[in-house]
Length: 168
Image 1: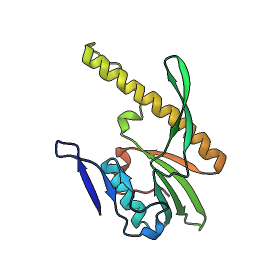
Image 2: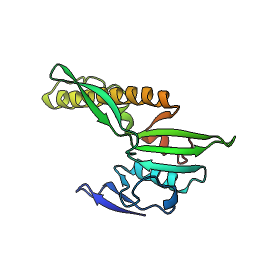
Image 3: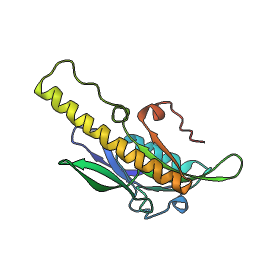
Image 4: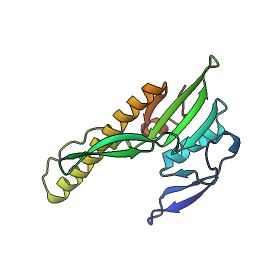
C-alpha cells in the first residue's frame, strides 16, 4: 500500500507508505516516506509483524547530533535515522531499536580504483565521503542509543535478500 515515485528510468526509489495497522504507527500516518525498496520492505515488516508494537519512519523524536569535517573545521549536523521500533521479545520484554537502512557498498570502506582516471577518482572520492559520513552518523547513533538503552542496527540489502526479516 503505497504511492510510488519513479527515478526516471522506470525504477521505483521512493514513495509514501499507507499502513494497514495505523494504530501501531507513531507519527503522522499520512507522511510515511520510504526512500528505497529495502525501506519499503521494512515498512511492510513493521506494519505487519505482530511483535512490533510501535514503529516510526524517520522518527522526529530521535534526532541525533554528529560532527562532520567541512573545509578543515568540524561542523555539527543532525542525523534522522530511518526507523524506530518497539518490539516485544519472546520473554515479553519490550525492546526499542533504531534502524538505519543503507546499501552494503556504503557500509564498507571503498577500495581505491586500480585504474586512475578522472571519473574513477571522482567516484572513489564520493564513495569515501559517503562512507566517512555514515561512520560518523553511526558512531553518534550508537552512543546516543547506548545512553538511552536502545539497540542500534544498520541493515543492508544483504539482510533483506535473505527473504525473511528477523530482528529478534
